[in-house]
Image 1 (spheres, rainbow, N blue to C red):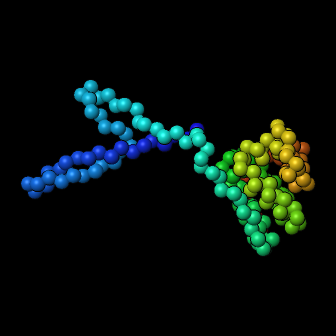
Image 2 (image 1 turned 30 degrees about the vertical axis):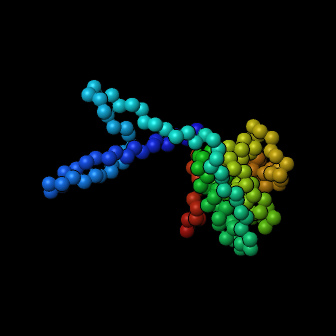
Image 3 (image 1 turned 60 degrees about the horizontal axis):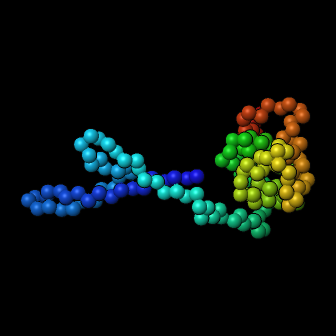
Length: 165
């Protein structure tokens, strides 16, 4: 649930060169009107009504394959959720360069169409069953990658660019 503090606008009268003028002041907290220093709690707006829609992902038309892979590499790293950032960035570093156009399109759909990153995490780790539309060869590759049979250390995202020798 999101809560946003409302702003309170105070009308203050100020003396200027023998006259008066009104000045509006906005504050994030209510004004203390009592002599004992009591401040009532800041009023909140409740945004749990789900009226803020998540924009629908629009697949890029006629995007060159290399540009698509570069975009997916970036999107794999910047998930907003550390767990998926680590899983998807290491997966993309290992497999994305060798993916054919069909596999790249499947990976694009996998990481961009679900609206919740936790769904991807739960599907990849096997906590929840993968829906039919995402159950494909790329998802199977990701599930194998998550199993980490080679016991690779994955506590950091891989470098974006290969270092020159």
